[in-house]
Image (cartoon, rainbow, N blue to C red; front, top):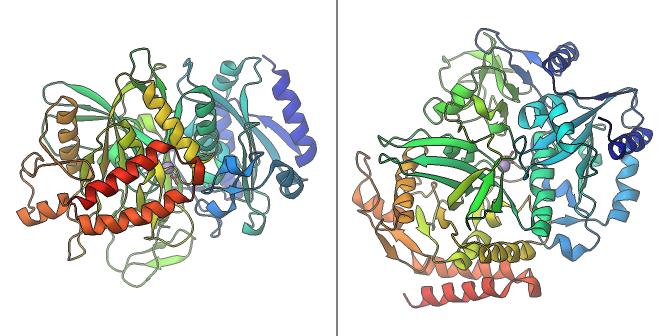
Length: 583
Ligand code: OXD
Ligand code: MN
């Protein structure tokens, strides 16, 4: 079926970028195989040992291009206020004069791939089509795993003009000429100068979060940086939970959790992005718009995330991991290296265990794999209706201050809790690691419009929910005075989920604190864990003095939004101050 809107747009982009040839991707296995062969010949992909890693490849990116570059990422709304104080902004007119010329002739001597992709299950009224034009076969191969790509997307689109238009070129890969521009009003993305996942796989952060968050606001739904998991209790009670955590804070680990408590079962629906709609039953219903995982490799091991390791059995694209002499991949946290073992680091340089001081794998090295390969994959991943959400988690990485878990007091309070999330930075973006920064709903780098309006949208969504989910805040990363983690995390996080499910059912003992409801020490299942009572107490403690400093900092953050800050957020802030003072 031909689509006039699509054809016209492709021609206009081609006229400017001047590729040698144009290839419209159909998503077939034959197409994938041919592309892989070509990338092996050019060195874009390297082979791995076929016995250990069937049909899997290694890609090494340019060393200056290994993470999202937030300072080169722009929201190009007509009005600056619509991008808000947390986004970089340039006007569409400026983008046209400053950025579009960088694309001129960028595909000379290259093939222009046209990648139609569907975000969301086939046949779902919630799913959306995007078309990514790119000159990177690595991007095509990743998009084929991360989305439902090719004919299936064109079939969904039909003759409609309703698709996100993404133009991506590697350009010369120079950070000097790198731009990732989003035009929410025309649902367009321009990305040049980077081949890195979050900058170049336009379906993911650019479309499914930055543009979709705006579209969701306009159409009354939500695009969130959240995992989706299903939990079944020993008595057969089943719930779905969505969770927002900043990048590289363990979303994939939680989504694929193997419970340490007997009788519990966890299913994975999504590990990074979640689109939620109000169902006829007054609940929130969620789909995972993606089809794959672009997971952080370091610290993924049989111990920390056995389901991820099993998902990686075959058909994986690894990016910037280390390569052992036997043709297998390695990253920090995987163990199993003999002292003195030599291999190649993520740049392809010789590396020796016990001698080399640099990391062998880049801290933001990744695996790309079909999420349905995880043993925990839910049979609802492809359900066009999505899944009903019983609880939402907000989580940050805080060494101090924030208790393991607390429950918000109301929807308005929940929106405040999400809006005031703080987390210590990670390697997923360039810049210093370990610095606390406000990251509302884990959307700081991904909200395509003014955060204050985004909170107003959250508040408005709450009004439409007759059966809103319960909302919790979690922090797996609190440390004791010795600097060691107080909580074992990983599979033991099931103990926190257990308490949440009890709360959903109307049970689960809790203390009322200024922050919200914190489980009593005996309400949390510490059974079989070697955590002394004093450390359990520290894990759940709320220190009013420290919180009054935190609240002052939060106040400064909220002030950035001026008059646009929704009144209920300000009111929640004042109420929290009052509760802390009363202690
Ligand atoms: C990701 C990120 O890649 O959040 O998911 O950076
Ligand atoms: Mn993410």
